[in-house]
Image (cartoon, rainbow, N blue to C red; front, side):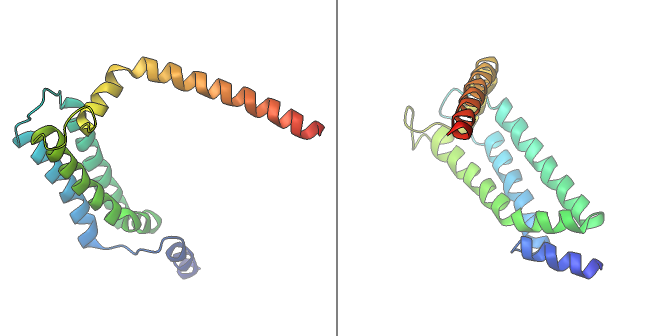
Length: 153
């Protein structure tokens, strides 16, 4: 019975578990964090929110990989499936940070660092929340009216 569950899980996720990719994905995010801490910035940016994001991401990956490895085969397959994506995200965050904020090769207003995006989201959190609620209310009203018209016709 357990073997059939394993086969079903393997069909759902095409990429199997690999210790190398799991370690590399954590290492890529750590490299992005170290790069952000050590390389001086060419722009005036508060990197606290970005660094907190990277620390939370590292903690999340570490927890998921440990839980998957020791406790849950389902989580293990899940983490193996997304390990290469997490590795790519870490490299992308590092390169994007270097090109925009640190070295200034890609400059404002066309290219914004992820740290600046997160900082602006933190600064405008109330406005973003209110805008999201307003959009959801409009969507619900539209959905109800559209459904009623559809049922009538």
